[in-house]
Image (cartoon, rainbow, N blue to C red; front, side):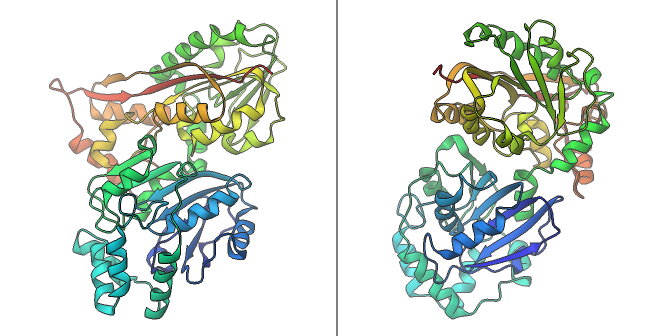
Length: 474
């Protein structure tokens, strides 16, 4: 099992990619993501589950503050073994399976047995070329791959394929946060992939082949947290004025939460708010809670809101990783509004809540779901990886948390024109266009193709999710 960095800039965050059969780093060398080192795993010839190679890999990533793990094709199967052993002791914040399954060779949940056996028995230079061509749906994608083709010997490919043939299937899919399925996959049948995964966690790419645009996968599923912090720092003065939907969502979250405050064993003393921003949620409860100690977290350096007690602690941190530093059972009330959609994995965050909540403690959160900004995604193909409410409810149940309230809705804002809409996104810092080189091209696409209404106005959809959870009294 080879392990090679293609980006190593002493970043505190890591992208770890388990590639598929027959690969090396050549097809992936152009990948990049600001703030992240990138480590490629390939060539599983001689691989042994639970062996020293997995331990070495775990040691390599243990020093990062967080790791986003991708598995692609047969790499999903090897990554699954690694995750089963190490996911609870490593700083993993998101795991994404792309066009592969944990049951890698299976008639209904993987590559059908007869097709795999035929590939193995008939493998030749000619059939290998045909296999590579089938990984793509167009000649451009195939040509780009061939220009940076893996530099592996034929014998190493044959031995690696035999290893996969001897590797047993796994059936634990809970170790993965997201499963990406390409409708046009001609290697792993899309129908078999659907059979293999819990549909709450699947994302279907309609026009994508088996070997998708991997840079697009990184742009979609890896959050540039440095950019997020910079955006919200820059719009601190304009956010409150322009974020009208977020204000409504914050007020609604508190209205629901306040009904359950009496359920807490003791009046909430230790209160933590995640993503305080300019204080939109804070001001809804600051004057109505009884005596309490308040801690406010934000990924950006934000000023302390005027409405809070003088004893309030303000910390600039990444809540997704900082939660591990909280003392067990120390938080009576955790709240967050319009923030957690920026997390890599809200379900994984929910899994950690029973550790930090006090007996009877409550976690109340509002974030945005899969239909948010669908107009932008339909035009540009760019989006955050928004969660579904079902995914969050599943995580809560598995964590033993009681669901006190669960709801979702859609809200549509209308702007005078597309240019007014883009200005709104800039003034609130919440746009899904990112900060990479293609963001400008996406903005041009929006100006040309946005679905305006007959009166020329531009609608924008929000999909708020509300979830209030409680730890059992002990």
